[in-house]
Amino acid sequence: MAVVAVWKCDRDGAMFDNKKDAEEHDKMLELAANITSLIERHVDEISEAAAEEIGLLLARQREALAKACKGKPEVLLEAEPAQPEAADDRVTPLAVSQ
Image 1 (tube, rainbow, N blue to C red):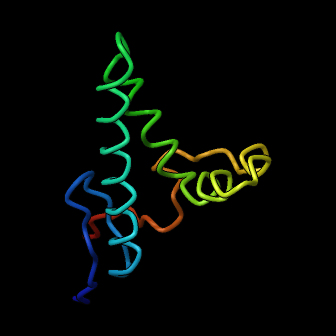
Image 2: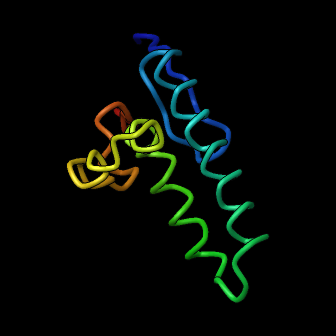
């Protein structure tokens, strides 16, 4: 039996082949949670689900947002659409083999 090292993100249970990708994903989720909290505090009558979705979108697009804030707002129009977490190619689904 082979032993395969994987890193699991505590926040959402995503599994990664290497520690660097796992830590990057965890930081993105932490940023998303903080953005969600900010939105919920400042936008009345927004649903929790909508706030979380916006938080994840902004966290996934953080690099484009940083460029836009530094004077290049057009990069937001060029940014790739955020993919759902299931489509993240760094996440390795685990399968039980018998």
